[in-house]
Image 1: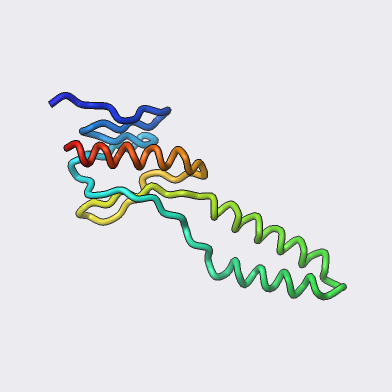
Image 2 (image 1 turned 180 degrees about the vertical axis):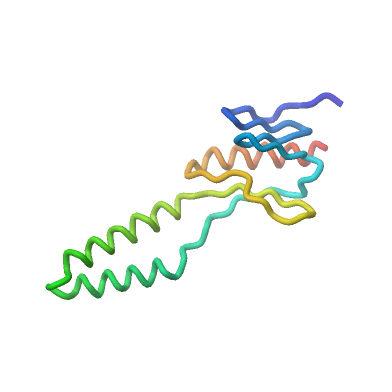
Length: 119
């Protein structure tokens, strides 16, 4: 059977036989499924936010409290944008690609799903 190509975009290649993602190659025959996940926000981000709000309520520490709130907010906003492409095989799950470009991650997921179903 010839190798059909489902996606070729930059350093990403998805065919019926292999998946190449940023210099790492995976055999399609070893992949059971593919999914996209988002990292969770750690509890410490909530604690830092509450601490910043508490400091912001006090006139003596207001500027520092606002800075802490802004920093925590920017960090959480960045984390919310991250998407992880996870390949699931008999050996477990592997984060194969991570990006803030959700459309790219979804295109790669769809191409890998096509490759899995074509085998």
